[in-house]
Length: 316
Image 1 (cartoon, rainbow, N blue to C red):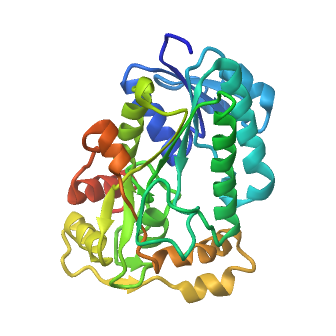
Image 2: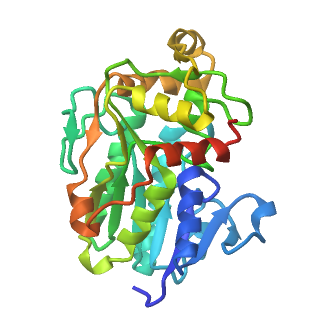
């Protein structure tokens, strides 16, 4: 592995990819990012490289000299996961093998089906009940397999994302709406059922610390983040009320009936409906390995995190 801290971020225009690129750059890493958008090629502390994660030669060229490849790229708009996800991962694996770099994969809870235990550690069985979950589980199996052949990886799994620069998630597309005044909170979960959230700046900080301790990581490493646990669905609602200064802000049921009605015609709604069980299952990731490695995971207090996230997405 190279002596220099050089990282390639795939998916740097997205929520977690962008947060990770900024945090690595702030931590002294030289950060490269692959993009198809020419308007980003000269932008800040990140070295933007024109290319496509679906093109193996582009990924290989961008990865030259790296010790870390952040694989945070996903097909846009929930489309074509079955044909795009695994080829993109194979391109990353090939580049990591060539450079002797570690792969960092931001993990999800999609891997777990409704049968999962209430508290989930890193070794919990993965029995996905959805198409998307099956693909995420296949990605992890593939990384495990290639780790036996010398390709190192780190999977950091967390709950639902929210943050000041994250637009494509349940917080900013379900509970509230970006770029407008908050008139009500639309909550997708069943009341009384716990739900886990991950504040993206905390997650990026944790991942940056983890990739900086290469000598303590296993060749195939999985780490869970506890993040922000809402035990009954009311904690997030109360934090939004506090952030907006409106104790009387209405909390309404998310219109699942509309999602169901429109899902045959709208891809995003179809994917949302498929993941509905996660709002009725009290799935809580435990973070023993995170604490073993870091001592304590980064944790911004609820009210501060929610207030900053609302300001960042323009929800007034």
